[in-house]
Image 1 (cartoon, rainbow, N blue to C red):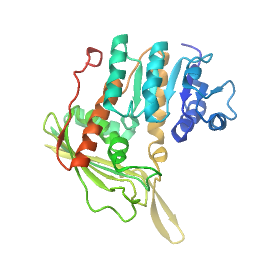
Image 2 (cartoon, rainbow, N blue to C red):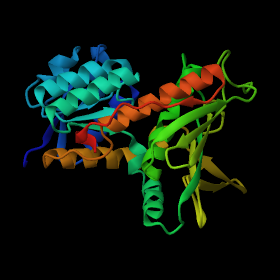
Image 3 (cartoon, one colour):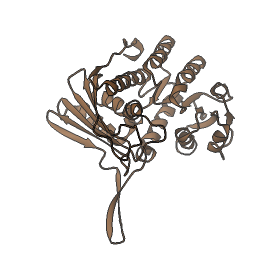
Image 4 (cartoon, rainbow, N blue to C red):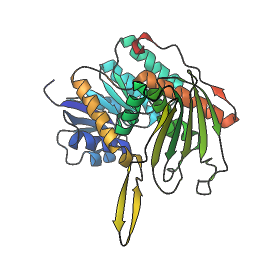
Length: 337
């Protein structure tokens, strides 16, 4: 493919607007051909100054717009299933922000629909797989130098939670990134989950049980723990330490800037994920564009999105009943073997 890849972006909110900027100014080989958002004014603001973009209120209209060859879904999770199936019906490759579909039943329907096509069309937006530090850790673990992985210790902290954020969302929205990262880093499925809750922070909104401590078991005997704290008040921090039979490796601490001024020095901490993982998002979208232009699909796929939703659902059940909950996955179709 010699011409620029025409991309329809569904959703022009915080994430969608950032992807529109990325496709227009950062990524090579692609252009924004159409944008859909129920709030068309928001979509028009996001594409201001970009030539040749059509704006639509309905996702289907954007998919059918002239010049559209691929789709980037950045709309709210409940809208993903319909958009994915519409893209499949048109044979359009998709980069879908996580979650693939919030509920595992809907995610499985997407997996089964793609399997019936007999070819992959979907890449899911688990951008940590494209972060340089995570990729170094993955390479180290795969190389076997540290021996068999025994545990992953993960930290995930936000400055504050957005309005309407629920206790369940700590697991099915925030920890979903650790779910995918753990599956990818270890090459193992997560088979059970337990959620422990300390006394909530005084900075957490009323009725939000924050922080929480989530423990996953894997099918090869490793343990993964996640501290999720979405009202830390001081910054956005993501760290991961792999403890193995012959050593350990930790990532995440290096993402800071040391500022010296007025007779003192201090370290700056990123305030949100778009700052901390800016490079990962750029790598992710560029990899998707490059593969799509070559007729390939790479990266985390629909099965990974389904597995993440299934594990997160088990996590929410564990959160609610205070016990250990096993994860039940459907048989994996041959397409994802």
